[in-house]
Image (cartoon, rainbow, N blue to C red; front, side, top):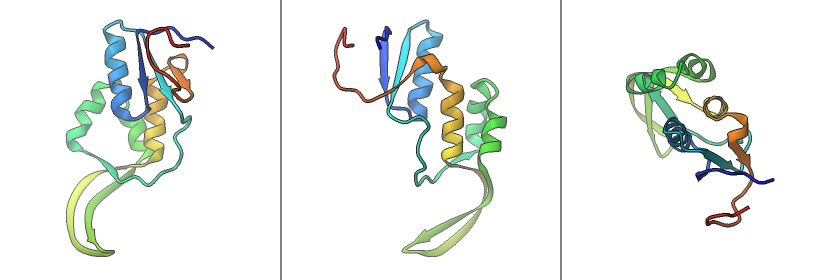
Length: 126
C-alpha cells in the first residue's frame, strides 16, 4: 500500500504522537509508522502528576479517559535492592499500558497510522 505524506514519524510513543499532532495543526501531512497496534503489555513506571494535568487538558479533553485508564496513587514508595527505604505523600496516577493505548488511539486517526516496520528511508520510498 502506498502512503503520501510530508513527514513519516517512526515510533509510537507519546512524544511522537504529540509531535504528529503539532505538525498536523500546521497543515503538514504526517503518517505515524508504528510496529505495535495495540502496544503490548510492558513494565512501566511512569506517573502523571498535577503538573502534567494542564497539558493533558489542553490536548482536547483527554484527562477523563486517562484517569479512567490509570491507577490513582497517594503515596510514593522509594525502594533500593528490593527494600522500601522511604515513603512520601504524593498525588498522581500510575500511567500503565491502558493509558498508553488510550492516548495512542485518541491522538492518531486510524488512517494516519501505518502498522509496520521501517525498511528504508529517503524521498519517494514506497
